[in-house]
Amino acid sequence: MQSLMTMRASNLTRRRFLAGGAVGVANVIALVALSACRKRQFTCNSTSGLSPEDVDVRKRLSYTDTSSDPQKTCASCQHYVPAPAGECGGCKLIKGPIHPQGYCKSYVPQI
Ligand code: SF4
Image (cartoon, rainbow, N blue to C red; front, side):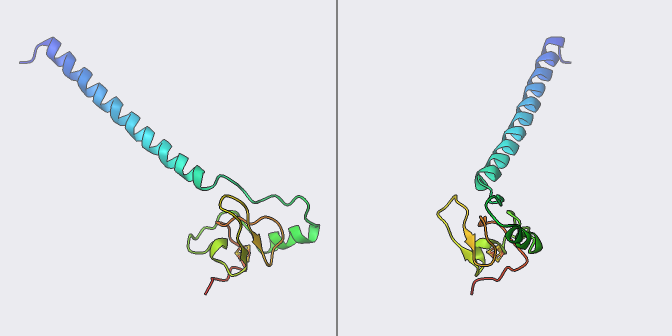
């Protein structure tokens, strides 16, 4: 039969273990979130300086900074005009800044 002191010590050890596990899970979640943020440190949604017609073209083609399909991104499109890493590129069809991880309805894969 365990003494009261031994049972308390056992409970403390279990609590510390569980608390440590919770902190570990929280740290992993924070690292994953941080990693996701680092991949997308910039946005290319600014339409300042564009004519209303050019803004309308972006909207009609449903340009988005984030492609829902990782296999279909602006960076792999024939119309993409690359920029240095970490900067917005361009597009031969749509005026304004274009994110390499973006997408629009006129996507054409590179051959
Ligand atoms: Fe991106 Fe669309 Fe331009 Fe292709 S056509 S680079 S998918 S904006």
